[in-house]
Length: 248
Image (cartoon, rainbow, N blue to C red):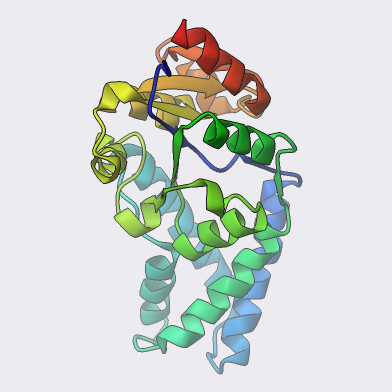
């Protein structure tokens, strides 16, 4: 008998990984964002505008890590443009600008080689699969899911941008439990971030599996002594074997 009925996955640094320098890519992406707005006819002074944009994003990043709420990049950009004298920019222009911006970083998110084989193996074993991603833009996540060719494996994909709450808030996990109509003890969570994936699973009463392949981040080091996963794997292809072992 399986130890669980369903498995929840994180996305970034779990099923896919980033192959470039984040700050350099973010710089190029913001340049693209500015050019899109400029071409749409918005007269913005490039350097101060982008400086304020980066400051707004950074302030939001700090807030979301303490409040576990999600304000989308769309909202940040709309509010900033209003401050610059453009309170009624058409939705289409903002969406196009953000799509072009995110395309820069999307080019550097690469599927793990064992992602599709592992998901396929779990489906063949009878597990239901879901995904919860902390992200400031839902369309970005949906594009990355399709780029990695993993959408067909998942019953449900939740993003913090769409739900307005972030892992480790247990409410975003509960949404998936409710969708499946499963109790927490019949579900496991696989993710790379101790403070979001593992703590979030524990907050929701869900079994936690820490994947360590891309987990060498300062945030994880800070939590290493205080947040303990139920199990650890180094790679995704270890997961089916672990689940079989837990079933004994």
